[in-house]
Image 1 (cartoon, rainbow, N blue to C red):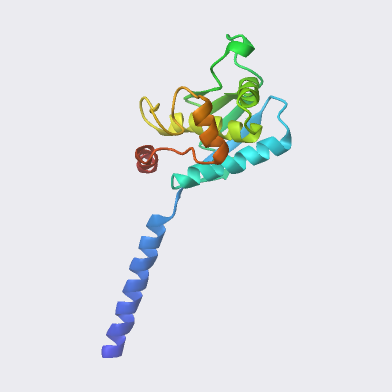
Image 2: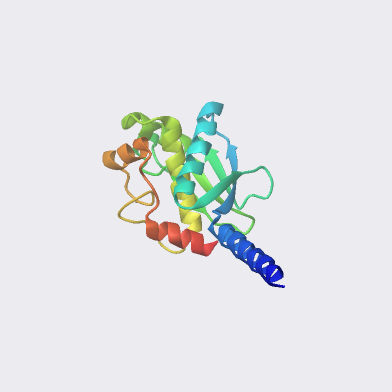
Length: 179
């Protein structure tokens, strides 16, 4: 009889361990990429990989999909309403009843990458992560540090180029909690 109780105890411990392991698995965000701009395929691929890494650092898994995405990343040639060289806007988060999307203005991203001597796919990835952050974070999501800073400057771009620009721990926790 005592062996039977040991088997039950081991089985219960295995179930508890499996449940605890499942709770620690990163949460998944399904994203779709659409581009109306002439972005080279390798730049899109590398930026998707970098977006995946940025969100993994925040404890989230990104799954790129063509069907039923939570959000669409739509890359358009440029923002309307600003002279191309003067535009500080590289993207916008749009919440719509038929699906939310992060719209990214490719020429502005290209100009910014060129000005600050950063790899184009890296710059594109950080703009995408920033705009998806707006869709995931409730309320005013800008912060004085991290990916969600409103004003991007040379120091911030330098952190992005090194791969050390992340969501703050508080933002990462809010994103995980809102899932």
